[in-house]
Length: 163
Image (cartoon, rainbow, N blue to C red; front, side, top):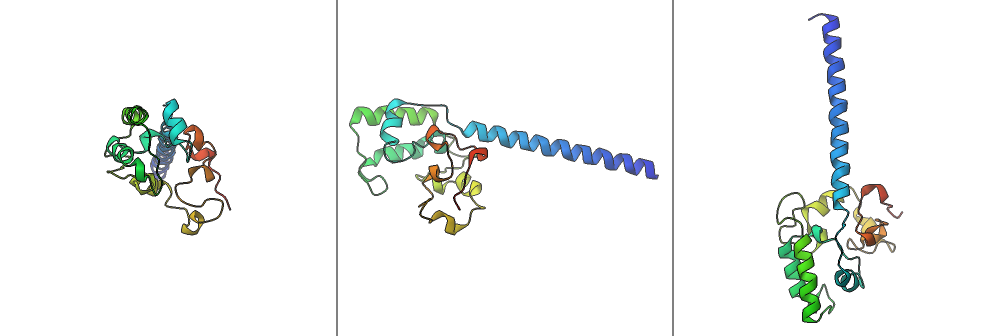
């Protein structure tokens, strides 16, 4: 193989690598955009959002939301009980917009978003000590870093990690 042929192969490989890199970035950006929740329900926003961020339904599987809603009297150490009609309405909303039981989000029956495979992957590069700072407090405090969490937007481009 002569020098010119090797150079052309190298150039083609560089261009192909660059194109693949840009395609991967576009797919990642699209995935981040899909995470932003467009679904909304007044009862869900009011009831769930009164104590914490109203977590987007797609962050957990329908089976996980059912488990959570069935245990509102002991909701992560608090009594978040609702009247039957409100609970039924919110559960229907959560189930209709829930994430898959398996696959990319990988909730796999988790009742804590912070225990899902997706959450652990997305936050793997954060130092453990950062979670317990006064400004963050815990892994469940999405709004500490995700400025638009209250609107269901968890896009990486809007993250501000407290120092």
